[in-house]
Length: 310
Length: 296
Image (tube, rainbow over all chains, first blue to last red; front, top):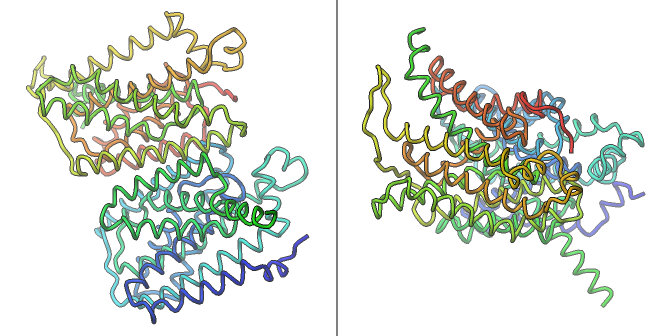
Protein backbone atom coordinates (compact mmCIF):
# COMPACT_ATOMS: atom_id res chain seq x y z
CA UNK A 1 0.00 0.00 0.00
CA UNK A 2 1.35 3.40 -0.95
CA UNK A 3 1.12 5.84 1.89
CA UNK A 4 0.54 9.53 1.36
CA UNK A 5 4.12 10.23 2.39
CA UNK A 6 5.65 7.97 -0.21
CA UNK A 7 3.60 9.91 -2.75
CA UNK A 8 5.32 13.09 -1.63
CA UNK A 9 8.56 11.54 -2.88
CA UNK A 10 7.28 10.95 -6.39
CA UNK A 11 8.70 12.94 -9.23
CA UNK A 12 5.32 14.45 -10.00
CA UNK A 13 5.10 16.31 -6.71
CA UNK A 14 8.52 17.88 -7.20
CA UNK A 15 7.66 18.85 -10.76
CA UNK A 16 4.46 20.33 -9.42
CA UNK A 17 6.09 22.49 -6.76
CA UNK A 18 8.84 23.63 -9.11
CA UNK A 19 6.23 24.56 -11.72
CA UNK A 20 4.08 26.45 -9.25
CA UNK A 21 7.11 28.35 -7.93
CA UNK A 22 7.90 29.36 -11.50
CA UNK A 23 4.33 30.54 -12.07
CA UNK A 24 4.58 32.59 -8.88
CA UNK A 25 7.46 34.47 -10.54
CA UNK A 26 5.37 35.43 -13.58
CA UNK A 27 4.24 38.86 -12.25
CA UNK A 28 7.76 40.08 -11.59
CA UNK A 29 9.32 38.69 -14.78
CA UNK A 30 6.70 38.71 -17.53
CA UNK A 31 4.38 41.55 -16.52
CA UNK A 32 0.67 42.02 -16.09
CA UNK A 33 -0.60 40.43 -19.32
CA UNK A 34 1.01 37.10 -18.50
CA UNK A 35 -0.05 37.43 -14.87
CA UNK A 36 -3.67 37.39 -16.01
CA UNK A 37 -3.03 34.31 -18.12
CA UNK A 38 -1.29 32.62 -15.20
CA UNK A 39 -4.26 33.47 -12.97
CA UNK A 40 -6.67 31.99 -15.53
CA UNK A 41 -4.56 28.88 -15.88
CA UNK A 42 -4.39 28.36 -12.12
CA UNK A 43 -8.15 28.87 -11.81
CA UNK A 44 -8.86 26.18 -14.42
CA UNK A 45 -6.40 23.77 -12.82
CA UNK A 46 -7.93 24.30 -9.37
CA UNK A 47 -11.52 23.78 -10.53
CA UNK A 48 -10.72 20.87 -12.84
CA UNK A 49 -8.69 19.15 -10.12
CA UNK A 50 -11.68 19.41 -7.77
CA UNK A 51 -13.95 18.14 -10.49
CA UNK A 52 -11.84 15.02 -11.03
CA UNK A 53 -11.89 14.34 -7.30
CA UNK A 54 -15.60 13.64 -7.64
CA UNK A 55 -16.40 12.95 -11.30
CA UNK A 56 -13.09 11.37 -12.28
CA UNK A 57 -13.05 9.00 -9.35
CA UNK A 58 -16.72 8.03 -9.14
CA UNK A 59 -17.55 8.20 -12.85
CA UNK A 60 -20.55 10.43 -12.10
CA UNK A 61 -20.02 13.20 -14.66
CA UNK A 62 -21.08 16.57 -13.26
CA UNK A 63 -21.99 19.03 -16.00
CA UNK A 64 -22.94 21.67 -13.45
CA UNK A 65 -19.84 22.48 -11.44
CA UNK A 66 -20.21 26.12 -12.44
CA UNK A 67 -22.92 26.38 -9.80
CA UNK A 68 -20.29 26.18 -7.03
CA UNK A 69 -18.09 28.71 -8.77
CA UNK A 70 -21.06 31.05 -9.14
CA UNK A 71 -22.21 30.65 -5.56
CA UNK A 72 -18.70 31.46 -4.30
CA UNK A 73 -18.60 34.56 -6.48
CA UNK A 74 -22.06 35.55 -5.27
CA UNK A 75 -21.07 35.24 -1.61
CA UNK A 76 -17.96 37.40 -2.09
CA UNK A 77 -19.77 39.99 -4.23
CA UNK A 78 -22.78 40.33 -1.95
CA UNK A 79 -20.72 40.62 1.24
CA UNK A 80 -18.14 42.93 -0.33
CA UNK A 81 -17.11 45.78 2.03
CA UNK A 82 -19.08 44.25 4.91
CA UNK A 83 -16.99 41.12 5.58
CA UNK A 84 -13.18 41.12 5.26
CA UNK A 85 -12.00 39.24 2.17
CA UNK A 86 -9.85 36.69 4.00
CA UNK A 87 -13.09 35.53 5.54
CA UNK A 88 -15.44 36.07 2.59
CA UNK A 89 -13.51 33.91 0.10
CA UNK A 90 -13.41 30.83 2.36
CA UNK A 91 -17.07 31.50 3.17
CA UNK A 92 -17.74 31.25 -0.56
CA UNK A 93 -16.15 27.80 -0.49
CA UNK A 94 -18.18 26.78 2.54
CA UNK A 95 -21.41 28.06 1.00
CA UNK A 96 -20.66 26.02 -2.13
CA UNK A 97 -19.95 22.94 -0.02
CA UNK A 98 -23.19 23.43 1.92
CA UNK A 99 -25.12 23.68 -1.33
CA UNK A 100 -23.45 20.49 -2.55
CA UNK A 101 -24.25 18.71 0.71
CA UNK A 102 -27.92 19.74 0.64
CA UNK A 103 -28.54 18.76 -2.98
CA UNK A 104 -26.33 15.66 -2.94
CA UNK A 105 -28.75 13.38 -1.13
CA UNK A 106 -31.52 13.52 -3.73
CA UNK A 107 -29.25 14.19 -6.73
CA UNK A 108 -26.83 11.31 -6.17
CA UNK A 109 -29.61 8.74 -6.26
CA UNK A 110 -29.95 9.51 -9.97
CA UNK A 111 -27.46 7.70 -12.19
CA UNK A 112 -25.94 7.64 -15.65
CA UNK A 113 -27.04 10.20 -18.22
CA UNK A 114 -29.85 11.41 -15.96
CA UNK A 115 -27.30 12.50 -13.38
CA UNK A 116 -25.38 14.43 -16.04
CA UNK A 117 -28.38 16.41 -17.28
CA UNK A 118 -29.68 16.82 -13.73
CA UNK A 119 -26.49 18.56 -12.55
CA UNK A 120 -26.74 20.78 -15.58
CA UNK A 121 -30.40 21.64 -14.95
CA UNK A 122 -29.73 22.28 -11.29
CA UNK A 123 -26.98 24.78 -12.10
CA UNK A 124 -29.29 26.59 -14.51
CA UNK A 125 -32.10 26.60 -11.94
CA UNK A 126 -29.82 28.18 -9.32
CA UNK A 127 -28.61 30.68 -11.94
CA UNK A 128 -32.11 31.85 -12.84
CA UNK A 129 -33.19 31.87 -9.18
CA UNK A 130 -30.32 34.15 -8.19
CA UNK A 131 -30.91 36.24 -11.31
CA UNK A 132 -34.53 36.82 -10.27
CA UNK A 133 -33.43 37.53 -6.70
CA UNK A 134 -30.99 40.17 -7.95
CA UNK A 135 -33.55 41.68 -10.33
CA UNK A 136 -36.15 41.90 -7.56
CA UNK A 137 -33.66 43.64 -5.27
CA UNK A 138 -32.69 45.93 -8.16
CA UNK A 139 -29.06 44.81 -8.49
CA UNK A 140 -28.57 43.32 -11.91
CA UNK A 141 -24.81 43.74 -11.59
CA UNK A 142 -22.50 44.85 -8.79
CA UNK A 143 -19.27 46.81 -9.03
CA UNK A 144 -16.51 45.90 -6.60
CA UNK A 145 -14.17 48.78 -5.75
CA UNK A 146 -10.79 48.39 -4.10
CA UNK A 147 -10.16 44.72 -4.84
CA UNK A 148 -6.72 43.19 -4.15
CA UNK A 149 -4.08 43.30 -6.89
CA UNK A 150 -3.82 40.59 -9.54
CA UNK A 151 -0.53 39.32 -8.02
CA UNK A 152 -2.16 38.66 -4.67
CA UNK A 153 -5.06 36.90 -6.37
CA UNK A 154 -2.58 34.78 -8.32
CA UNK A 155 -0.80 33.71 -5.13
CA UNK A 156 -4.14 32.80 -3.56
CA UNK A 157 -5.12 30.84 -6.68
CA UNK A 158 -1.80 28.94 -6.59
CA UNK A 159 -2.68 28.13 -3.00
CA UNK A 160 -5.99 26.69 -4.20
CA UNK A 161 -4.19 24.57 -6.79
CA UNK A 162 -1.94 23.16 -4.08
CA UNK A 163 -4.94 22.54 -1.84
CA UNK A 164 -6.93 20.80 -4.58
CA UNK A 165 -3.97 18.73 -5.79
CA UNK A 166 -2.88 17.58 -2.34
CA UNK A 167 -6.49 16.70 -1.50
CA UNK A 168 -6.71 14.59 -4.65
CA UNK A 169 -3.36 12.92 -3.90
CA UNK A 170 -4.32 12.09 -0.34
CA UNK A 171 -7.77 10.86 -1.36
CA UNK A 172 -6.32 8.72 -4.16
CA UNK A 173 -4.21 6.67 -1.80
CA UNK A 174 -6.73 6.46 1.02
CA UNK A 175 -9.32 3.81 1.74
CA UNK A 176 -11.92 6.44 0.84
CA UNK A 177 -10.39 6.99 -2.60
CA UNK A 178 -10.28 3.29 -3.35
CA UNK A 179 -13.92 3.10 -2.33
CA UNK A 180 -14.75 5.82 -4.86
CA UNK A 181 -12.89 3.97 -7.62
CA UNK A 182 -14.80 0.78 -6.86
CA UNK A 183 -18.05 2.79 -7.15
CA UNK A 184 -16.95 3.90 -10.60
CA UNK A 185 -16.22 0.35 -11.72
CA UNK A 186 -19.35 -1.26 -10.32
CA UNK A 187 -21.61 0.44 -7.83
CA UNK A 188 -23.65 -2.62 -6.92
CA UNK A 189 -20.54 -4.70 -6.30
CA UNK A 190 -19.11 -1.86 -4.21
CA UNK A 191 -22.17 -1.86 -1.98
CA UNK A 192 -22.02 -5.65 -1.74
CA UNK A 193 -18.45 -5.70 -0.43
CA UNK A 194 -19.35 -3.10 2.17
CA UNK A 195 -18.38 0.27 0.67
CA UNK A 196 -20.73 2.88 2.17
CA UNK A 197 -21.67 3.99 -1.35
CA UNK A 198 -24.03 6.88 -0.66
CA UNK A 199 -21.92 8.35 2.15
CA UNK A 200 -18.74 8.22 0.06
CA UNK A 201 -20.43 9.85 -2.91
CA UNK A 202 -21.86 12.63 -0.74
CA UNK A 203 -18.49 13.33 0.89
CA UNK A 204 -16.68 13.42 -2.45
CA UNK A 205 -19.32 15.66 -4.02
CA UNK A 206 -19.17 18.07 -1.08
CA UNK A 207 -15.36 18.25 -1.03
CA UNK A 208 -15.28 18.84 -4.77
CA UNK A 209 -17.41 21.97 -4.33
CA UNK A 210 -15.12 23.82 -1.90
CA UNK A 211 -12.28 24.86 -4.19
CA UNK A 212 -14.54 25.94 -7.10
CA UNK A 213 -16.46 28.09 -4.59
CA UNK A 214 -13.31 29.87 -3.44
CA UNK A 215 -12.02 30.16 -7.01
CA UNK A 216 -15.29 31.83 -8.00
CA UNK A 217 -14.86 34.34 -5.18
CA UNK A 218 -11.31 35.16 -6.28
CA UNK A 219 -12.34 35.55 -9.92
CA UNK A 220 -15.16 37.95 -8.93
CA UNK A 221 -12.47 40.07 -7.25
CA UNK A 222 -10.36 39.84 -10.40
CA UNK A 223 -13.08 41.09 -12.75
CA UNK A 224 -14.11 43.80 -10.19
CA UNK A 225 -17.73 43.35 -11.04
CA UNK A 226 -20.31 40.66 -10.57
CA UNK A 227 -22.91 39.64 -13.09
CA UNK A 228 -25.05 36.56 -12.54
CA UNK A 229 -25.15 35.39 -16.17
CA UNK A 230 -21.38 35.59 -16.37
CA UNK A 231 -20.36 33.71 -13.23
CA UNK A 232 -22.98 31.00 -13.81
CA UNK A 233 -22.15 30.63 -17.50
CA UNK A 234 -22.55 26.93 -18.43
CA UNK A 235 -19.51 27.24 -20.71
CA UNK A 236 -17.43 27.14 -17.50
CA UNK A 237 -18.77 23.67 -16.65
CA UNK A 238 -18.24 22.58 -20.23
CA UNK A 239 -14.64 23.81 -20.23
CA UNK A 240 -13.87 22.03 -16.96
CA UNK A 241 -15.21 18.72 -18.25
CA UNK A 242 -13.30 19.13 -21.51
CA UNK A 243 -10.04 19.95 -19.71
CA UNK A 244 -10.42 16.92 -17.45
CA UNK A 245 -11.10 14.58 -20.35
CA UNK A 246 -8.33 15.95 -22.55
CA UNK A 247 -5.83 15.80 -19.69
CA UNK A 248 -7.04 12.52 -18.26
CA UNK A 249 -9.81 12.47 -15.67
CA UNK A 250 -8.47 9.59 -13.62
CA UNK A 251 -5.04 11.07 -13.08
CA UNK A 252 -3.77 13.82 -10.79
CA UNK A 253 -1.67 15.20 -13.68
CA UNK A 254 -4.72 15.36 -15.96
CA UNK A 255 -6.09 18.77 -14.90
CA UNK A 256 -2.65 20.38 -15.36
CA UNK A 257 -2.21 18.92 -18.83
CA UNK A 258 -5.78 19.65 -19.92
CA UNK A 259 -5.79 23.20 -18.56
CA UNK A 260 -2.43 24.09 -20.14
CA UNK A 261 -3.63 22.64 -23.44
CA UNK A 262 -6.90 24.59 -23.56
CA UNK A 263 -5.47 27.84 -22.13
CA UNK A 264 -2.77 27.79 -24.81
CA UNK A 265 -5.41 27.08 -27.45
CA UNK A 266 -7.54 29.95 -26.21
CA UNK A 267 -4.51 32.27 -26.20
CA UNK A 268 -3.97 31.43 -29.85
CA UNK A 269 -7.56 31.81 -31.04
CA UNK A 270 -9.89 33.32 -28.45
CA UNK A 271 -9.23 37.00 -29.16
CA UNK A 272 -9.05 36.66 -32.95
CA UNK A 273 -11.61 33.93 -33.60
CA UNK A 274 -13.58 32.96 -30.48
CA UNK A 275 -16.03 30.82 -32.45
CA UNK A 276 -13.25 28.91 -34.14
CA UNK A 277 -11.76 28.30 -30.68
CA UNK A 278 -15.07 26.86 -29.44
CA UNK A 279 -15.31 24.62 -32.53
CA UNK A 280 -11.83 23.28 -31.76
CA UNK A 281 -12.79 22.68 -28.12
CA UNK A 282 -15.86 20.70 -29.20
CA UNK A 283 -13.78 18.76 -31.71
CA UNK A 284 -11.09 17.89 -29.17
CA UNK A 285 -13.71 16.78 -26.66
CA UNK A 286 -15.21 14.39 -29.23
CA UNK A 287 -11.83 13.08 -30.40
CA UNK A 288 -10.59 12.42 -26.88
CA UNK A 289 -13.82 10.73 -25.73
CA UNK A 290 -13.66 8.39 -28.72
CA UNK A 291 -9.95 7.74 -29.21
CA UNK A 292 -8.22 8.60 -25.93
CA UNK A 293 -10.72 8.43 -23.07
CA UNK A 294 -7.85 8.50 -20.55
CA UNK A 295 -6.39 11.68 -21.93
CA UNK A 296 -2.90 13.03 -22.45
CA UNK A 297 -1.75 11.60 -19.10
CA UNK A 298 -2.29 8.03 -20.30
CA UNK A 299 -0.54 8.91 -23.54
CA UNK A 300 2.52 10.11 -21.59
CA UNK A 301 2.56 6.88 -19.60
CA UNK A 302 2.49 4.85 -22.80
CA UNK A 303 5.35 6.91 -24.18
CA UNK A 304 7.42 6.29 -21.06
CA UNK A 305 6.79 2.56 -21.07
CA UNK A 306 7.70 2.19 -24.74
CA UNK A 307 10.89 4.18 -24.18
CA UNK A 308 11.90 1.95 -21.26
CA UNK A 309 11.15 -1.28 -23.10
CA UNK A 310 12.63 -0.07 -26.34
CA UNK B 1 -57.97 38.10 -14.33
CA UNK B 2 -60.45 35.31 -14.89
CA UNK B 3 -61.37 36.83 -18.23
CA UNK B 4 -57.77 36.62 -19.37
CA UNK B 5 -57.50 33.02 -18.29
CA UNK B 6 -60.56 31.82 -20.17
CA UNK B 7 -59.81 33.90 -23.25
CA UNK B 8 -59.53 31.83 -26.43
CA UNK B 9 -56.50 33.97 -27.33
CA UNK B 10 -54.42 32.42 -24.58
CA UNK B 11 -55.65 28.94 -25.33
CA UNK B 12 -54.63 29.41 -28.95
CA UNK B 13 -51.12 30.54 -27.97
CA UNK B 14 -50.81 27.54 -25.65
CA UNK B 15 -52.00 25.23 -28.39
CA UNK B 16 -49.41 26.57 -30.86
CA UNK B 17 -46.57 26.36 -28.33
CA UNK B 18 -47.72 22.94 -27.16
CA UNK B 19 -47.85 21.51 -30.67
CA UNK B 20 -44.34 22.82 -31.29
CA UNK B 21 -43.08 21.23 -28.06
CA UNK B 22 -44.75 17.93 -28.98
CA UNK B 23 -43.06 17.95 -32.35
CA UNK B 24 -39.64 18.78 -30.90
CA UNK B 25 -39.97 16.14 -28.21
CA UNK B 26 -41.09 13.53 -30.74
CA UNK B 27 -37.73 13.69 -32.52
CA UNK B 28 -35.79 13.50 -29.26
CA UNK B 29 -37.93 10.57 -28.12
CA UNK B 30 -37.36 8.59 -31.31
CA UNK B 31 -33.59 8.81 -30.84
CA UNK B 32 -33.76 8.08 -27.12
CA UNK B 33 -36.31 5.31 -27.47
CA UNK B 34 -34.45 3.31 -30.07
CA UNK B 35 -30.84 4.01 -29.04
CA UNK B 36 -30.98 5.15 -25.40
CA UNK B 37 -29.02 8.28 -26.34
CA UNK B 38 -29.99 11.70 -25.01
CA UNK B 39 -29.30 14.17 -27.78
CA UNK B 40 -28.20 17.44 -26.16
CA UNK B 41 -27.67 18.84 -29.65
CA UNK B 42 -31.34 18.39 -30.59
CA UNK B 43 -32.08 22.11 -30.24
CA UNK B 44 -29.14 22.94 -32.48
CA UNK B 45 -30.70 20.90 -35.28
CA UNK B 46 -33.80 23.06 -34.80
CA UNK B 47 -31.47 26.02 -35.26
CA UNK B 48 -30.05 24.48 -38.46
CA UNK B 49 -33.56 23.94 -39.80
CA UNK B 50 -34.49 27.52 -38.95
CA UNK B 51 -31.41 28.94 -40.70
CA UNK B 52 -32.01 26.80 -43.79
CA UNK B 53 -35.58 28.06 -44.09
CA UNK B 54 -34.52 31.62 -43.34
CA UNK B 55 -31.90 31.73 -46.10
CA UNK B 56 -34.09 30.02 -48.68
CA UNK B 57 -36.89 32.50 -48.01
CA UNK B 58 -34.67 35.59 -47.80
CA UNK B 59 -32.57 34.81 -50.87
CA UNK B 60 -35.13 33.32 -53.22
CA UNK B 61 -38.51 34.16 -51.74
CA UNK B 62 -39.47 30.47 -51.74
CA UNK B 63 -41.99 30.09 -48.89
CA UNK B 64 -41.02 28.15 -45.73
CA UNK B 65 -43.42 25.31 -46.55
CA UNK B 66 -41.29 24.52 -49.56
CA UNK B 67 -38.06 25.11 -47.67
CA UNK B 68 -39.24 22.78 -44.92
CA UNK B 69 -38.36 19.47 -46.63
CA UNK B 70 -34.92 20.81 -47.37
CA UNK B 71 -34.48 21.81 -43.72
CA UNK B 72 -35.48 18.27 -42.77
CA UNK B 73 -33.07 16.86 -45.35
CA UNK B 74 -30.09 18.89 -44.15
CA UNK B 75 -30.78 17.98 -40.53
CA UNK B 76 -31.09 14.31 -41.51
CA UNK B 77 -27.83 14.50 -43.46
CA UNK B 78 -26.05 15.87 -40.40
CA UNK B 79 -27.61 13.03 -38.44
CA UNK B 80 -26.31 10.47 -40.95
CA UNK B 81 -22.79 11.90 -40.80
CA UNK B 82 -22.80 11.82 -37.00
CA UNK B 83 -24.24 8.31 -36.92
CA UNK B 84 -21.59 6.80 -39.14
CA UNK B 85 -18.64 8.80 -37.81
CA UNK B 86 -19.38 8.69 -34.08
CA UNK B 87 -22.41 6.98 -32.65
CA UNK B 88 -22.40 3.63 -34.42
CA UNK B 89 -18.93 3.05 -33.02
CA UNK B 90 -20.08 4.13 -29.54
CA UNK B 91 -23.08 1.81 -29.54
CA UNK B 92 -21.10 -1.23 -30.59
CA UNK B 93 -18.43 -0.54 -27.95
CA UNK B 94 -17.68 -2.93 -25.14
CA UNK B 95 -18.28 -0.42 -22.33
CA UNK B 96 -21.09 -0.75 -19.83
CA UNK B 97 -24.40 0.79 -20.85
CA UNK B 98 -24.18 3.63 -18.34
CA UNK B 99 -20.68 4.58 -19.46
CA UNK B 100 -21.79 4.61 -23.10
CA UNK B 101 -24.77 6.80 -22.27
CA UNK B 102 -22.74 9.30 -20.24
CA UNK B 103 -20.02 9.41 -22.91
CA UNK B 104 -22.57 9.91 -25.67
CA UNK B 105 -23.90 12.87 -23.75
CA UNK B 106 -20.44 14.43 -23.82
CA UNK B 107 -20.16 13.66 -27.53
CA UNK B 108 -23.49 15.34 -28.25
CA UNK B 109 -22.34 18.26 -26.14
CA UNK B 110 -19.29 18.59 -28.36
CA UNK B 111 -21.50 18.37 -31.46
CA UNK B 112 -23.76 21.08 -30.04
CA UNK B 113 -20.86 23.47 -29.44
CA UNK B 114 -19.49 22.81 -32.92
CA UNK B 115 -22.86 23.39 -34.66
CA UNK B 116 -23.58 26.61 -32.75
CA UNK B 117 -20.20 28.12 -33.40
CA UNK B 118 -19.99 27.01 -37.02
CA UNK B 119 -23.27 28.76 -37.77
CA UNK B 120 -22.11 31.71 -35.66
CA UNK B 121 -18.93 31.93 -37.71
CA UNK B 122 -20.74 31.66 -41.04
CA UNK B 123 -23.64 34.03 -40.38
CA UNK B 124 -22.53 36.07 -37.29
CA UNK B 125 -24.15 35.75 -33.90
CA UNK B 126 -26.72 38.48 -34.38
CA UNK B 127 -30.40 37.50 -34.43
CA UNK B 128 -32.32 37.50 -37.70
CA UNK B 129 -35.96 37.27 -38.68
CA UNK B 130 -38.21 37.40 -41.71
CA UNK B 131 -41.83 38.31 -42.24
CA UNK B 132 -44.10 35.63 -43.59
CA UNK B 133 -47.86 35.20 -43.40
CA UNK B 134 -48.18 37.80 -40.67
CA UNK B 135 -51.65 38.92 -41.67
CA UNK B 136 -54.11 38.67 -38.82
CA UNK B 137 -57.22 36.54 -39.20
CA UNK B 138 -60.12 37.01 -36.85
CA UNK B 139 -62.53 34.21 -36.08
CA UNK B 140 -65.28 35.14 -33.59
CA UNK B 141 -63.03 37.41 -31.54
CA UNK B 142 -59.96 35.17 -31.72
CA UNK B 143 -57.04 36.89 -33.43
CA UNK B 144 -54.63 34.56 -35.20
CA UNK B 145 -51.67 35.39 -37.40
CA UNK B 146 -51.37 33.19 -40.46
CA UNK B 147 -47.95 31.89 -39.49
CA UNK B 148 -49.09 30.66 -36.08
CA UNK B 149 -52.04 28.94 -37.65
CA UNK B 150 -49.62 27.37 -40.14
CA UNK B 151 -47.41 26.08 -37.29
CA UNK B 152 -50.40 24.49 -35.64
CA UNK B 153 -51.62 22.84 -38.84
CA UNK B 154 -48.19 21.61 -39.95
CA UNK B 155 -47.27 20.29 -36.51
CA UNK B 156 -50.62 18.47 -36.31
CA UNK B 157 -50.08 16.90 -39.74
CA UNK B 158 -46.55 15.73 -38.93
CA UNK B 159 -47.48 14.43 -35.47
CA UNK B 160 -50.48 12.52 -36.79
CA UNK B 161 -48.60 10.98 -39.67
CA UNK B 162 -45.72 9.85 -37.47
CA UNK B 163 -48.09 8.27 -34.95
CA UNK B 164 -50.04 6.53 -37.73
CA UNK B 165 -46.75 5.34 -39.25
CA UNK B 166 -45.57 3.94 -35.93
CA UNK B 167 -48.84 2.18 -35.10
CA UNK B 168 -50.11 1.06 -38.53
CA UNK B 169 -47.22 0.27 -40.86
CA UNK B 170 -45.06 -2.78 -40.41
CA UNK B 171 -41.89 -0.73 -40.50
CA UNK B 172 -43.27 1.64 -37.87
CA UNK B 173 -44.39 -1.25 -35.71
CA UNK B 174 -40.89 -2.70 -35.73
CA UNK B 175 -39.57 0.67 -34.54
CA UNK B 176 -42.19 0.63 -31.76
CA UNK B 177 -41.08 -2.88 -30.85
CA UNK B 178 -37.47 -1.76 -30.77
CA UNK B 179 -38.41 1.10 -28.43
CA UNK B 180 -40.23 -1.31 -26.13
CA UNK B 181 -37.57 -3.98 -25.86
CA UNK B 182 -34.39 -4.10 -27.86
CA UNK B 183 -33.43 -7.66 -26.97
CA UNK B 184 -36.84 -9.05 -27.81
CA UNK B 185 -36.92 -7.05 -31.05
CA UNK B 186 -33.63 -8.64 -32.05
CA UNK B 187 -34.92 -12.09 -31.18
CA UNK B 188 -37.96 -11.79 -33.46
CA UNK B 189 -35.71 -10.89 -36.37
CA UNK B 190 -35.82 -7.11 -36.45
CA UNK B 191 -32.75 -5.49 -38.00
CA UNK B 192 -31.89 -3.41 -34.94
CA UNK B 193 -28.98 -1.38 -36.28
CA UNK B 194 -30.79 -0.40 -39.48
CA UNK B 195 -33.88 0.74 -37.56
CA UNK B 196 -31.67 2.62 -35.13
CA UNK B 197 -30.12 4.45 -38.04
CA UNK B 198 -33.51 5.28 -39.55
CA UNK B 199 -34.85 6.49 -36.21
CA UNK B 200 -31.71 8.53 -35.59
CA UNK B 201 -31.94 10.48 -38.84
CA UNK B 202 -35.75 10.73 -38.55
CA UNK B 203 -35.29 12.34 -35.13
CA UNK B 204 -32.88 14.83 -36.67
CA UNK B 205 -35.22 15.48 -39.61
CA UNK B 206 -38.10 16.18 -37.23
CA UNK B 207 -35.90 18.74 -35.45
CA UNK B 208 -35.20 20.35 -38.84
CA UNK B 209 -38.95 20.55 -39.54
CA UNK B 210 -39.58 22.07 -36.12
CA UNK B 211 -36.85 24.63 -36.85
CA UNK B 212 -38.49 25.59 -40.14
CA UNK B 213 -41.76 26.18 -38.27
CA UNK B 214 -40.12 28.13 -35.43
CA UNK B 215 -38.37 30.46 -37.89
CA UNK B 216 -41.75 31.69 -39.19
CA UNK B 217 -42.62 33.43 -35.93
CA UNK B 218 -39.44 33.86 -33.90
CA UNK B 219 -36.06 35.50 -34.25
CA UNK B 220 -33.34 33.03 -35.07
CA UNK B 221 -29.75 33.03 -33.79
CA UNK B 222 -26.96 30.44 -33.52
CA UNK B 223 -27.72 29.95 -29.83
CA UNK B 224 -31.50 29.71 -30.10
CA UNK B 225 -31.54 25.92 -29.85
CA UNK B 226 -30.64 25.41 -26.25
CA UNK B 227 -33.92 26.50 -24.61
CA UNK B 228 -35.70 24.11 -26.99
CA UNK B 229 -33.42 21.24 -25.98
CA UNK B 230 -34.25 21.83 -22.34
CA UNK B 231 -37.97 22.16 -23.02
CA UNK B 232 -37.83 18.93 -25.02
CA UNK B 233 -36.06 17.17 -22.15
CA UNK B 234 -38.77 18.34 -19.75
CA UNK B 235 -41.41 17.05 -22.14
CA UNK B 236 -39.96 13.60 -22.75
CA UNK B 237 -39.20 13.10 -19.07
CA UNK B 238 -42.76 14.18 -18.24
CA UNK B 239 -44.19 11.84 -20.83
CA UNK B 240 -41.92 8.96 -19.94
CA UNK B 241 -38.62 8.50 -21.78
CA UNK B 242 -39.19 6.67 -25.05
CA UNK B 243 -42.98 6.87 -24.70
CA UNK B 244 -43.99 8.47 -28.01
CA UNK B 245 -47.64 9.20 -27.24
CA UNK B 246 -46.87 10.24 -23.67
CA UNK B 247 -44.39 12.74 -25.07
CA UNK B 248 -46.98 14.27 -27.39
CA UNK B 249 -49.46 14.71 -24.55
CA UNK B 250 -46.74 16.10 -22.28
CA UNK B 251 -45.71 18.58 -24.99
CA UNK B 252 -49.21 20.03 -25.09
CA UNK B 253 -49.25 20.06 -21.29
CA UNK B 254 -46.01 22.02 -21.06
CA UNK B 255 -47.25 24.49 -23.67
CA UNK B 256 -50.31 25.24 -21.56
CA UNK B 257 -48.44 25.32 -18.22
CA UNK B 258 -45.81 27.69 -19.63
CA UNK B 259 -48.27 30.14 -21.21
CA UNK B 260 -50.55 30.29 -18.17
CA UNK B 261 -47.78 30.54 -15.57
CA UNK B 262 -46.12 33.37 -17.51
CA UNK B 263 -49.45 35.22 -17.73
CA UNK B 264 -50.11 34.73 -14.03
CA UNK B 265 -46.62 35.76 -12.88
CA UNK B 266 -44.13 37.36 -15.25
CA UNK B 267 -41.94 36.40 -18.18
CA UNK B 268 -38.93 36.41 -15.84
CA UNK B 269 -40.18 33.22 -14.29
CA UNK B 270 -40.29 31.27 -17.54
CA UNK B 271 -36.76 29.86 -17.23
CA UNK B 272 -37.20 29.13 -13.54
CA UNK B 273 -40.40 27.26 -14.32
CA UNK B 274 -38.85 25.13 -17.05
CA UNK B 275 -35.72 24.26 -15.04
CA UNK B 276 -37.74 23.82 -11.86
CA UNK B 277 -39.96 21.28 -13.61
CA UNK B 278 -36.89 19.66 -15.16
CA UNK B 279 -35.06 19.19 -11.85
CA UNK B 280 -38.21 18.36 -9.92
CA UNK B 281 -39.34 15.60 -12.26
CA UNK B 282 -35.87 14.07 -12.54
CA UNK B 283 -35.57 13.95 -8.77
CA UNK B 284 -39.05 12.71 -7.99
CA UNK B 285 -39.98 10.47 -10.90
CA UNK B 286 -37.15 9.88 -13.38
CA UNK B 287 -39.38 7.33 -15.14
CA UNK B 288 -41.83 10.14 -16.02
CA UNK B 289 -45.20 11.25 -14.74
CA UNK B 290 -47.10 9.48 -17.51
CA UNK B 291 -44.67 6.64 -18.03
CA UNK B 292 -44.42 3.32 -16.33
CA UNK B 293 -41.27 2.19 -14.59
CA UNK B 294 -38.94 0.49 -17.00
CA UNK B 295 -35.32 -0.42 -16.60
CA UNK B 296 -33.11 -1.51 -19.39
